[in-house]
Image 1 (cartoon, rainbow, N blue to C red):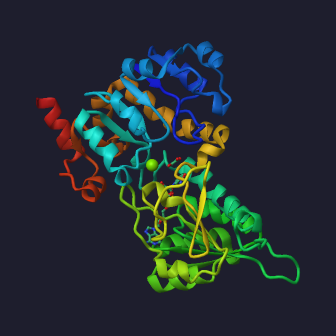
Image 2: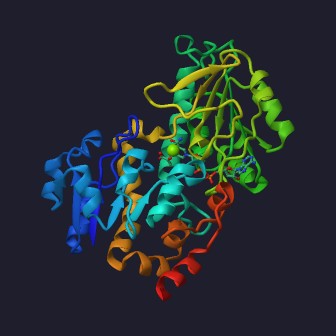
Image 3: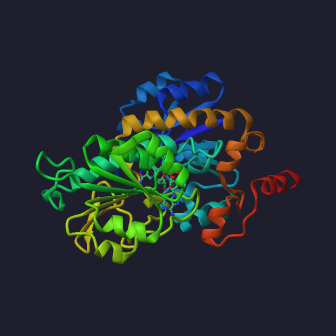
Length: 375
Ligand SMILES: NC(=O)C1=CN([C@@H]2O[C@H](COP(=O)(O)OP(=O)(O)OC[C@H]3O[C@@H](n4cnc5c(N)ncnc54)[C@H](O)[C@@H]3O)[C@@H](O)[C@H]2O)C=CC1
Ligand SMILES: CC(=O)C(=O)O
Ligand SMILES: [Mg+2]
């Protein structure tokens, strides 16, 4: 199979979908790899390293047009839709519930779109996990900085100092992002509360963190009370594949004190805060509404690309190799995890939450495959 790796073009997206070591693996197994010249630069991987691994360096159009499977990090942007074609395998983060135009372009073109973020193994999301670890850790770090006066914050140090109370951090969603945010926030000495819908998850968090955190079950009343007294709110809820639920209302944000900070990590699925009306970028990461600093960058790990590229490709490579070795149809048929990643297959939306949120007819992956084979 021919694998194509274009350079990422989202604002400050410095990750790349394949390392030179990953390219060497494909080549070793008899596949051909085209990498866009400069694609690895942001992650400190040079063209020479890809060439030494046996990849060919070329331009974006050639990568897209020659490849049977394009591997990316972030969802394609509109300038890339022109490369979509029938039968092309696209393996990347897609977050389609928050991307109606991209979904339409994929459906109209017949692309086989497999989303990293919905690949499921025993209830876990192994291709989302490493980036959620990065984004969760960054969320606490970024929130702490935004609380500084010169960044628009209220001017508090999360740890406090002897004789002065600690800052309050509320984390809504106690999964991978939430747990990693808590690790850093607790490490910084903040007073941390984690809110989750699952009491079992809260039990696990209680076992991990003991008395260094508070736990609360997710109800509108608990969220309202915790948000009102928070200096930093970190949003980390996920319903896989679906648009994020709006759990933090505008009134709750109005009740936060001026200079408080919201970091909505769930923005890639649309965000959980009513006052977040647009995705922000690493170039212009915040805006202020009702006196509260809002941060809503959808590609947070792109700012620490060396760590993130290594962590992401550790997780994606085994699945990408399987797709290349078996071809998309067989890989989807034989590997349940890859099947759960299938979001769009030759004009049909095969992930139920995406179909429901965007108003498409849902066709199960199994059914879509059956139709493809019999046609
Ligand atoms: N902005 C960025 O750069 C990045 C964003 N993300 C996003 O962060 C979000 C969280 O991801 P993960 O932590 O990996 O997901 P996860 O599945 O590990 O955790 C989600 C948690 O939300 C909880 N939850 C669901 N409904 C809830 C409700 N109504 N109230 C409270 N909790 C609720 C679940 O019980 C679960 O514990 C996802 O949208 C993911 O795509 C991840 C990485 C980077
Ligand atoms: C998960 C995701 O959206 C990211 O890593 O950018
Ligand atoms: Mg997006």
